[in-house]
Image 1 (cartoon, rainbow, N blue to C red):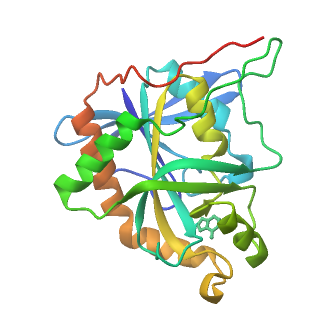
Image 2 (tube, rainbow, N blue to C red):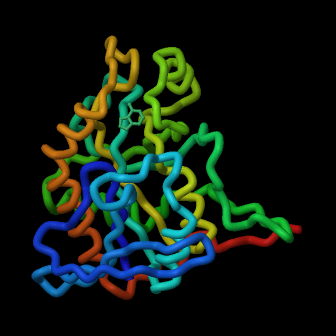
Length: 257
Ligand code: HPA
């Protein structure tokens, strides 16, 4: 079963018949929506910030969500993510396929492997190559412009936006876009052995890039304009992958003690 995690601005799927479900997990309840599209495609949808964007990024119950998705049989996740761009050549409005991340979060639980025992998850392929290839194909078929070479996501703690000095530092470190939610989501998916890929929508230039001063309103405005294209990209991909998708190359949890 495929799940779509909708970030900022993606709170529902167009035309879907929905059935809400609460899955009890050791980390609290996970609220997910079972969805059936007019063409019969069934998948799971989860708005990352809850209905009405109620939960801030540093308080997201990511462990409950990922545990819940595993529990109900999800094998692949396609996620959306609103980001600021660290580079002038990735302008607002761009869709970017994430290829890697750099973690600057500070205070979140980022693992299921909390002991006893030691597990070091391999995240060399945090973004599943098979899902990424499927997203590229779906973009090509639908004529959707998608920046596809490795785009590096810098995950900050939030909820504040970054300072211009932080953004300059992230650019020097090799970051391309900046957001607040890919860690621990992508990490927890890897720990659960669930394939994961994410498409970022650039909603603004990050702080200081061409003098930018990001605002939440600006983020929401661009998401409202482009959210539909993003949903079409993900839904087209989910259709191609089919309900029984399994990639077989995604790294499984490795025990090292
Ligand atoms: N910084 C961090 N997160 C974001 C931004 C940003 O500029 N835009 C959208 N999400």
